[in-house]
Image 1: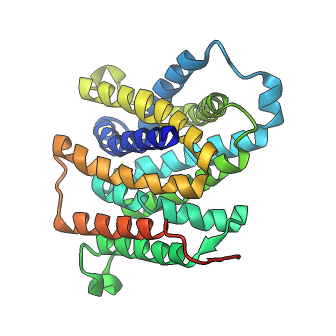
Image 2 (image 1 turned 180 degrees about the horizontal axis):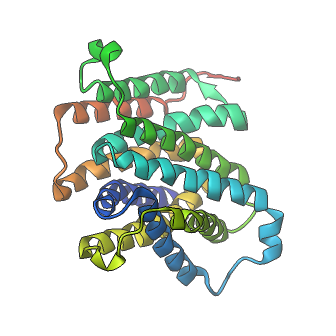
Length: 292
């Protein structure tokens, strides 16, 4: 029950992140928004862990895993995430990211040799159908006429990177404390944003509205530091494939928060969500198991 609570809170906060990121992008370029997200996120994480900071020997021993998770996983995800949200809606992005359990399962099979069942295969297929229903705006017959939004494409790429991140967390769980892993990987992600900041178009920060700063602090303190800490803790305990089912909560959270952010909700959003969730629930059934 405790592990489930960790994952529920984390994914609910990630659902809110889609809206907070859209607010930030009204005032700043994508990479600058990412910089502020991780600046506030790292500050809060340091506040949590300043009495128990990881030693250099621990970092050096696990530098490869930490670099992959922090630079490829977190920065890669945020790079495509913020760029995608410039060109698509928060609801579309959240529904595409809800494919995460299916992608995490696929990567778990390939990279961790996880066993896969026939129900999981069926669930993966149905979840992908749900996303196709979203992309075609409720008319699958128009699939061959669809012009994919560049924003949807970027969000899908961010989802692939995020799924790999989950698998990597599970593969390397137990090598260090969850707080240490979360802090170091977030610091690495922040440093990459810091390095590219001078090459971005920087507006006068004094001109940013209070909405920007509220969104930046919210996505940093809660949607980054707290959410990643709880998620990493949950994934370390039950694995990427099982934890992935909780990603269903992210689009639901996004839909609920859309009522406060003025997002337009269409029937195909609801139907897509129902199809995807049905597929993810089917993945949890336990029929005969086959080895890859």
